[in-house]
Length: 435
Image (cartoon, rainbow, N blue to C red):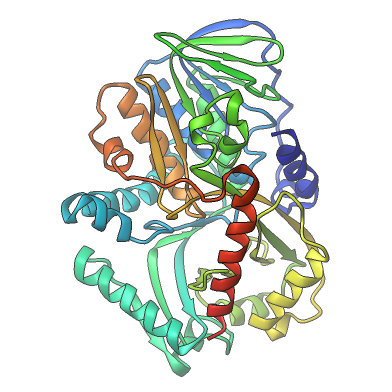
């Protein structure tokens, strides 16, 4: 766990998000023994959302964070608020049937609305923008994108604005893409501003948050005890919301989870601020954008008109070599007009993926809940997850159980071989992306 957190921290020293906020003074680590109704492990979007929902229901909540609030994936992601799931609807339809698949889809729409509700309720200034563009860079990918959009329209009533050929230029100033679909429900925001706003909201509701308080052990039973280096919290319930670090906790906290999700590195660069006319030519509708390749590019503009361009993946804890240069080359392949534009920021870190890219929410025994497997759709889905787990703790588990009913497979290969196995599988999909 230490190496994973250290790698995240070092790379994020040059994060645009960290550079564009003023963090409050660090919160003290846990240095005593406390009792609570619920102990939440992880102060990212999922953990903070759970804490807010629980506190609003009258529960005494303590949040333990190994580093700082939103220092992990929640504070450095692409900022894209996306409907649906990285897996698509397939796992839900195949395992749960049409009715529950529709419930899951509808809740993904609620997840976007919940962000806007919390922004309004807690007055969170986080550069919120609506508008999302799905793009395809080959004829085969265009057909796949069109089929997916038609399926969402037919089965879920979700309409998008379709364009192909020359009409794509109305949405994005790039000749790379052969087709696109635009919708207004999804969009983007500044994730660290949003996350710090959630932390302020949780604190205002009486939630106790302790930073630099990694959980080193979890004793289960009728009462759950979460131990840190200098203290412990005894509670009726625990919520494990460490996401990409949950697999790394392994034998310390939840060994059952260590093979069900895997941390994957993803990276972003931020250019110097662009002239307004240049920015408008590249993304006329100021949408967030993502392609439908297996190894995908995702990008958007910041409020101060920087291009924030993400992509690349790593299945080890090592940062790829020449990251700034290779990411700038990927960006220039999409937007030749940005060739040579200075890159002021480069950062990244880990997100968690499940084997089938569907969210993995569940219980360990009767009073320990876990939330993981967001697989790149976590900006919106984490907030929903926090709401659902709070409802489950309060005895209203029907919505939570739509997700907990999904069956998940372990990553193959065990602790030693699952990384090279996944790398080989990814290489196969990377080659397919070019045809």
